[in-house]
Image (tube, rainbow, N blue to C red):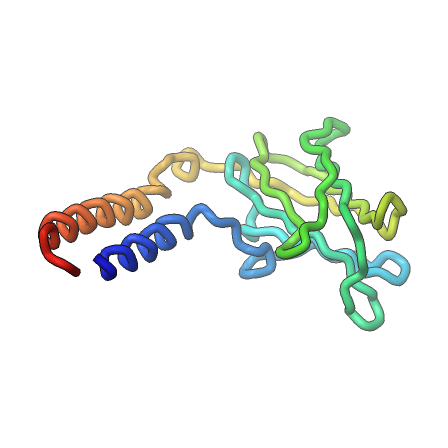
Length: 172
């Protein structure tokens, strides 16, 4: 029974991994701008921003001279296109992990991301970054991207069922 419990825990972790958001600087790109004594860094992943796809943004501000992280409690984010706001919110800095958000852009075109870092209501630094959201082809919009994940899930269910029924009655 002990082996089955270990198998079950590992399987749940493996199945949950594709749904986790990675830190944007893992293999993505970033917008960077020096504003006064601060370096504002907005990491994003994937590196190509495509309409209809999930996009992760992580927000950081550093001291330009020594590159140490600057203390902030939240960041106000506004994402707009042609004076139309698509996303506006405050993002609280968590105790652990990146300060970020995930969104899907409904259409391609030129956008502007504004980020204002605050510490307990006092503005620390702010910057704007223009960027382009690429048009998605019909092939990219298909749900075929998830087929390997469904195959993994199906294999897990089949393997678990076989493991359970073959091991039934035995003390594993």
